[in-house]
Image (tube, helix red, strand yellow):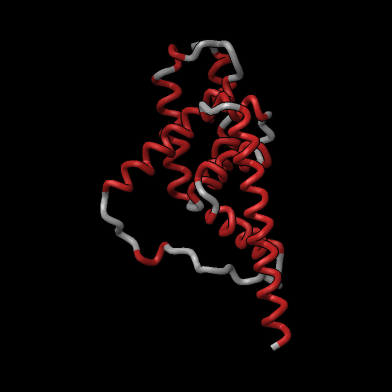
Length: 170
């Protein structure tokens, strides 16, 4: 592996951490996912065919690792009853940090397929083609998932605002 390739992989770490945090909503699980991604990329680097950006390849590895974890969790009995999200998130009125927490909770309520696309396009600024390549789906599927994710997030946020207004009236 060339020094430039190592530098390119290391440069992806902040974006990988951000994406992993968005997928898992848990700092420790996100760090584990990033570490697994880095281990897989280092050990399978010879498999990377320098046809595209290394960044998209790394996100593809993370996506596959995330899906693998989800599948393995489904086969195991659930160990935490306290992990369930509330039906409606509470409206934060104190600071931006609370609003970000609420947004994170709303993101976690999206189906994984929609959340992945929304994070890659909206946060990581991937093109539709890059997202399609990373996730291994057609561009039309990316566009459809993104549209549904945005609409569902908008509806959830509007619902939250309505609940907040009703509570203030009471």
